[in-house]
Image (cartoon, rainbow, N blue to C red; front, top):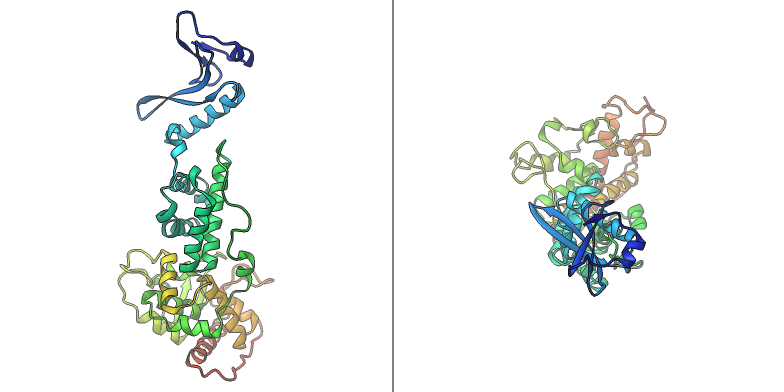
Length: 387
């Protein structure tokens, strides 16, 4: 029976004459009904169709859930149906279900979406992925972080926690009942401090450089010699290399302009020792660039014994070593692809080519001295005037 439901009607509603129970369907929210039985029990139900099947969802009683509250819950359930999910299964939604929904809706807008998915695939899903999100306890997350810290370092544990926290907070904004079990103080490091100043010590640099980790080791050494971002190098193609120059095209450069990196002899030696199996330089089969940075880093950590750093820290380490080798700040910043304040945004991509070439050779020479244990006085480079 359809009618416009009001709080006054709901409070005194009775079954129709001769019926054990009556469903009073709200004319304001389609499918929502107040079910009233002869013993005075009143419950809210939502009648809907999904996958060609008619279903009914009961989600509370009146007056514990008010009329306005029932209408809100019905609208939320109908939104879930539009997304292709059955609201009757919401109570058993797993952490993986919610993570994938988040990545598909809001997470897809993030530049780090692919990396976040990799962290979840490797570190979270094997342990907690199949657990109903509403049942996950704080102690379970703590034990997960313990394992990640032991295997991949404290920074990775903290980054993983940040991803889980964001997903759970997002889910809490869409649920009436869910409360995130994550509280302040669970992080294993201070990410802001870690991001500002983490560089490898000489001892750590030697261990990473000498690590026998196959493609992962070559890739790490190349990052140190070029100060490239991890994705810049990972997606590098042979077509971008001409002679001793690697040109990062504008569409792959964060600053939106072409960046020419004159490769040092050491970087060229690593590059051209790689098998050419396809268009991508760093690839297993050549058809796709390397991915799975978490697994790559895990292999490198295992081979080197050095942890508690990220691949981006190799870029920061290279920049620090340039300063140590006497490379002028202006030239070092251009090697990293940073746009120097006060210069035009689009400039000749071969500008400062000679200076960058000299800087990368100085970087390679300093790394060689550190690794060989023969570091002595560093030859200071003379800067040229701006052109």
